[in-house]
Image 1: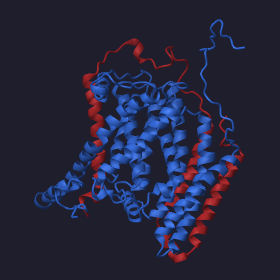
Image 2: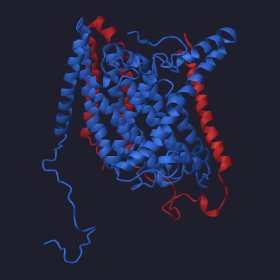
Image 3: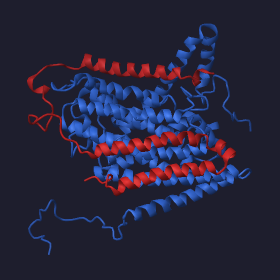
Image 4: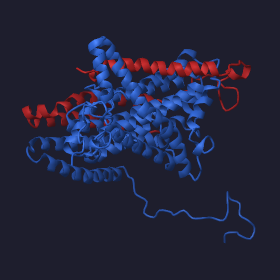
Length: 420
Length: 124
């Protein structure tokens, strides 16, 4: 059967959207000026990635979907008033935030306070530039994309510290100190987990990693489950997602570093938190879940659609953990980063390096070895985590208490129903 | 070199990001109300007048954590080039490349163990 199996160069093949723009860019570059083409190319790329990915995901997965899903997890309805099923809620939120007054305390450091949202939001656009949406759909195919991504994604910490310090508020300062301490603590195992990926794929380019996974028909997330889990936990700590959001824990320090912010300045922080979480999900989908490739399915389905689907799936885990897990204390979090994650990440790095050494010598059975490594890694992941948890003195609960229904509420026992 | 291989895209992205922020802030400036009132300029402290200055004392552990982070982040910077060129080096020098990094990591693990024993990682 003569299905159009490969992505062709024809402009009407919308599975790769770059086909639409390449002829235009070539025309501009040949006939008008090449400088204009160099400016036009990234502009089209940014606008396209914004339209097909960032904006819809931000509004309908990040704001609406998250609230709706958490509502369902907590036996609520979630937004359901504005428009059908509450679908216009995110737009209504944005309009409402614009109409709010942004207060600035008299004693605050005004310049830094106004600068903090700018520093927070501007790098978020840059994160999406290095994510490959398809074989040729990538805004900037940088050859050190992984390092670049790690560097840019740690910039919001600086903005958060600026926000917390400038507010002239004790809660803001504590929140800022906490977010800096936690981000830098979780940065270390994150980078060490990434090193394992770099060892196997031999490249720092994200496009190269996707091509490696496509070539060997395996996901890095399956090959290195420890690195994947470490990445998930660390990134949720760095992004202040709820099980680890001690920097804005409203039960301890009012709203952390955002205490003094209101109106659109707060809205930028809130909106771009979701933007960073989406970027982290897209990065995870690219590095660990095969990116735009899907074991041959990418020849039929548009590759960028596959990436968007994987990103949203990863984001769903964020929402799920946020809806189910209680918030952790700061001492638990810091101890977890340094005492558990870091040794496990180092052990994982050594294991992966050993396997890489073996893989160099496996000349004609590399695919078999790869699947063998996968099984070994899953087994060793369980072993490492169990052994290290036992070493630290963690004992699993042998007799878990089951939840049970009680007749009294809040200590009040109705007359005649006293517990004997 | 195609349009998609250039670092200039990132510069344009930076400019686009700043335009995005300033559009949102200017829109808020246009649509939002601005009325100055005496109580509005007071920083928030659970509804009461703030006591003292913002210079609250912060635990010294944050400083120790920062030092530890510096050590391990610099370590990661050193390991990244090793990881990228691992295969090429291994084909030339064999297992030596692996053992060398093992020694490097072992020294750092010793450092972590020392910090652990001295109680730097405890958060009390």
